Amino acid sequence: MKNAMNFIENKTLPIMTEVSNQRHLSAVRDGLVATIPITVIGSLFLLVPSIPWPNGYVNFFASNPDLVSKFLIPFQMSLSLLAIYACFGIGLRLANSYNLDGLSGGVSAVFTFFLTMNITSFEEGSFLSVTHLGGEGIFTAIITAILAVEVVRLCEKWNIGIKLPGSVPSNVSSSFSALIPMAISVLIIWGVVHFLGFDVNELISTIVTPLLSVSSNSILAPLIFVSLTCIMWLFGIHPAALMSIMMPIWTINAEANMAAVAAGQAIPNIGVQPFIFTFLWIGGGGGTLALCLFMCFSKSKVLKQLGNLSIIPSFFNINEPILFGLPIVLNATLAIPFFLAPIVCTFVTYFAFTTGIVPGMAYPLAAVWTVPSVFSAAIATASIRGSMLFVVNFLIYGAIYYPFFKNYEQKLVAQETGEQITQSA
Image (cartoon, rainbow, N blue to C red; front, side, top):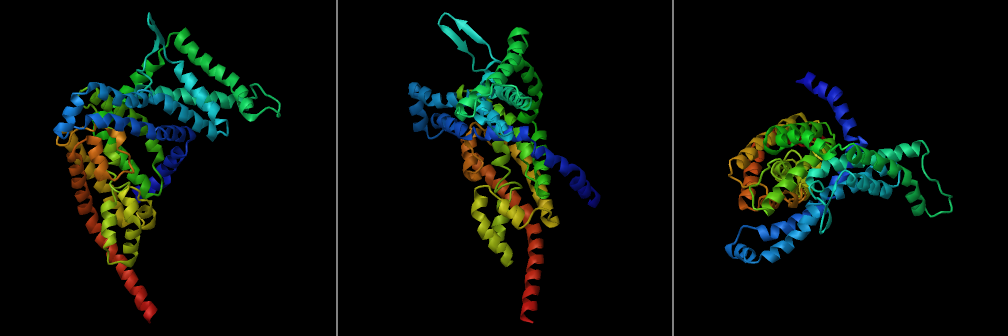
């Protein structure tokens, strides 16, 4: 066991740390996170006419299809164009990381992304298909945003561009500086897609489809994500790199779920963000809300005080005070339940969704991770059975954490008692 821990600490974790700090992954993560307000608002507009109860409410919207179509407009303007928003955010963040002009980076990224599309002409006019502007175009948006900004960086490095005198306003100067790099990015994509006839979106779809199939309906993806996340937290490393990898996949799956609901079809995907952040991370990474509740009634003064201070943030799934204050990081006693409990709940949650005991997550993007899990579970599934699954998992966490908590509490109480005796003497 000691050798395994040493191997993880000395060999694996440095690699994870480097990946976590990698600027491109950080830009992807930040760009996708920036779309959260858009996706939440769009999801809520879809949710309002789709709530399956009570009957009077359902019948009202069923008899007013025009009203339903109006509610769907914000949903379509958010999820159907999600790749555009993400592309701009990624380009801006990546440019900022190089100390380049972020606005120029974002605009160049979006322009380059649009060049991967084809315009279809009819008698009524010319149209741009939204097929790859939503979730399906996320990976194309990521690649084109990185390409556009890297071209800008290289041009800056090699002093390629239009330089204006210092007396020219900075906003005008930055626009002209971006002209040549943007032209290079456009020429690259235009040449590959429209001159050589190479379909970038189709190629990316072919590569990504196996990843989506694994993440959508297999238990393997959540097990790997949960295991690696717990290991990283136990050594005090934020699992941001894992988020960067999984966020695009979760977003694509979520968009497909919500599109299916809007079309009246069955919900296709299990592999969406609420599977982890609502049903497993109850109280934060490692599902520590039950542990925090135990601490509030602890015989140890230290645990009780920390529990009282941490219970409200934990209710909103923020548990850094416990991870680093208890601590759970590098804590041999609490490492076992911190790793074991989420694994058990992963199997329980997967079983609940695959068997239909809990309905599919129709509105995953409306379930923001900072919303208390008991509420976001009902929002994601539009069913009280989602909240019931939360209760089941919460009880499982409590049952697994409790004996280890009592053991740790006993040690702290003994230390506190010894300190009191020493002080009295």
